[in-house]
Length: 396
Image (cartoon, rainbow, N blue to C red; front, side, top):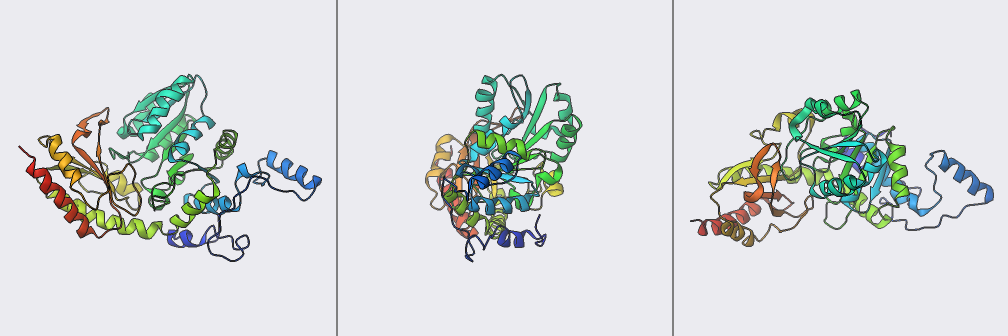
């Protein structure tokens, strides 16, 4: 840990700035390369020896370079972690760390509200390798102990779920996991390191899709895994062995984007509050799914564990809204883009499909997911109003 202020604002600006390497420039440039030249045969042997002992020694480009080191230092500082790795897509960071902890014959518990592609990985790749996967109710809390088996090795959380927004009692789940010597991982993309630091709650590995709020500008694909001291050697080893590392150019964009994450997310949160208040007044809206909303069932846990909220939420429309009306709503939006992502500077909106989770009959067929960007909140409300007017013309 550095000597910087505990304030996240100061950390975001000052940590990870190696001006010796960057020759004084504020932003460390992308160091792209494969070969690392050694000073001598003795130097090559010594570096290799130190690397074999687990030290952070640069011998080849697959271990990253100065650009990676600076960004990893910042992520470790923000999360309170021992080590960070970066992957070339958001999904890669969610799935590759699994292989650090599980093997054939093991049993893993995965939240039923997990990111869809992560679920697909569990149902196909993991099960195909002889690993038992069981999906648990997100709100299970300490009752997850009832699902622990003799061969349970890992619990994978995502809080809140990025479509259904159930909050998990992470501290309670971690206490059970530690009691039974079970590893824990969490997809923390929604909260970012600003609003929740899972490692401080005892989680072993925290995942972020840097594609979202960390990058913040919809121009990169990347993820990170930040680990505690116990998990770090295992995650690093499997990541290197599987040949996964985000390139320096992408790291550079993520590093630049995260510097302004706090001001972006605070502005987006304020707009989200105004838009949620407006949406609640619309007669076609049944409820809002957003943990930061006092009426949301996950609000007490969010209030207890989190210090803020992402501007990503869902809206459940009433069942009498026909598909044609929903299509008209989407097709008449001018500011909200229709795109499968979130966390950028622009507002996005998609229609959700499926069910929230196996303990909830709420269908996604009449659900909308909104990611609020940096546009003026009143302009976004007018855009939604335009959509609702088109929707109402199609109502029976």
